[in-house]
Each structure stands twice: as C-alpha cells, then as structure tokens.
Length: 307
Image 1 (tube, rainbow, N blue to C red):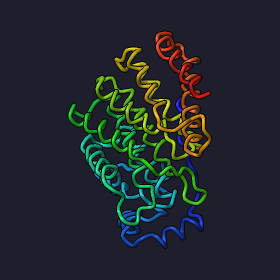
Image 2: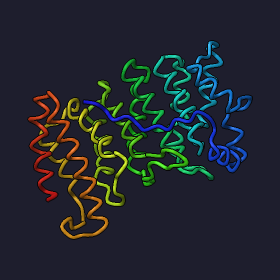
Image 3: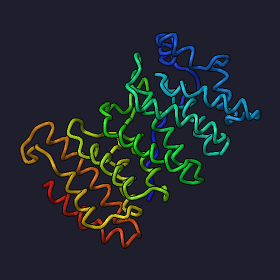
Image 4: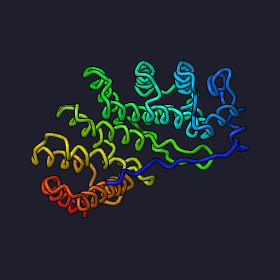
C-alpha cells in the first residue's frame, strides 16, 4: 500500500514574502533561526550541498540548532531547511543516538506544552513530523527503551486528541497540517513490532477522536493519512474481530442526528465517509486475506450506517 507523502513547497531563493516574514517575526525567533553564526544563504548552500557536514560534532550541533526553525513562519527555513535537514540526517543515520534523544526530549515538551506566545501554529505540527522520523528510527533499529517508547505513544496520543488547529496549506506560509503530521507519527509507531496491545488501543482511541471530527471538513488528505496507521494496526494489533467492531462503533457514536442537516452533522459524515472509503479501497487492494476477512465486513457495515 502506498502511503501518501506530505506536500512540500520548494523555493530556490528567498521570496519577498520570506523577507517580510523574517523582518516581522520576533527578535527572539530571528536570533534562533537562522541559528547564531549562520545565514539563510549559508543554509541554502548547505541544502544544495546535500546537507554534507564532515565534522560530526558540528553536524550534531547544527541539527540541534535547527530545531528552532521548525516553528518559523517562512516555509524555506521551516520546511525546506529545518525539517528536510533533520529528516535527511536521521534517515542517513548521520545523527548520534545522544543527539536523537535530545531532539526527542525537546520535541516531546514542545507538543505537550501550550504554544508559546507569538507562535503562529507551526511549532507543534512540525515537531510531530520530526518525531515521526524519530519513531521511524526506533522501529527500524531500536534505540529507545520500553519506558521511552511508552512515553512517545502517550505523548503522541495526547497531542493528537487535542489538535484543534485544522489549517492545512497557506499560499504564503506553506503547511501546518497538525492532524496529518501526527497521523504520520502514528503510522511510524503502528509499524513498530515492539509495541503491545495496550499501546495499540491507546493509539486507536486517539485516532478515533480526529476521524470522527465534526468541527471541520477535512480537505487536505487528512482521512487518508489517518487511515494508514489504522490499516497497519489492523495487521499488527492483537485485537479480535469483536474488539475491532467495538472500535468502529465508537466512530459512529454521537449526540448529533446524522440524518438532520447541520454543519456539524455534515462534517462528521464527510470525514467518516472519507476515512472509511479510503480504508475500504486499501483493504480491497491489499493481498492481506486475513485482514480483509476481519475488517472488510465491519467497514462495509459502517459505510451503510452513514447512508
């Protein structure tokens, strides 16, 4: 099954909008990103040089310094430099375990605390996206202990449940996409064979909160992203058909009358239908016979309940 990738803006140089955002942002943020003793030009040259930093100690420190760029309103600094550099180094195994642990701890705090004054909605979604990369490292080559892995599952679930900023793409500022980014984090966790049934159920409870969202109409691919960890949990979670049936029933539980037209009922039906349809298609296209037998009848019954 092909997992949808996150959209990304590519800027060859600083645009006028980028310059305006750099000037207007707070002095503290300007001091933090670009990092001290670095410039936008130097960072774009580093990107052009495929993030090569031969000095290992300097690379580790640069990675830590770039964390502040994840909250910057300029998509060049936030997405094309901050996130892309961290992702490249992590996927290339170019950051030490100590550095990755420091990043994990800092970003856990970032998604767990209330947004700081002046934050315009990027810090937590992009923290979640980098934490997805850290979860990917751990599921491919375990470096976290059981307590740290449990902490990550709890933090991810708590953050996903409370996301209420549903902004996606902005022409000037790029992506926020908190729900989708956290779903990507959940996806990486769902692939980790070290997780247990209790952790799987905690993740599913949190995913259900956003799948049955009745406050906003998803239109930036969120249902597909939410579907992906559910699909993989279907493969890995030690849950009976009855337990899965109860989880799908929880998606339908609401005080809303879904047969009465209102913004909330329409949003709930829209989001549920998009999620269930995506899951149905991916189950049908998969070659996982046991998974199809377990989930397809429940998904079809759930879709019929929406009509």
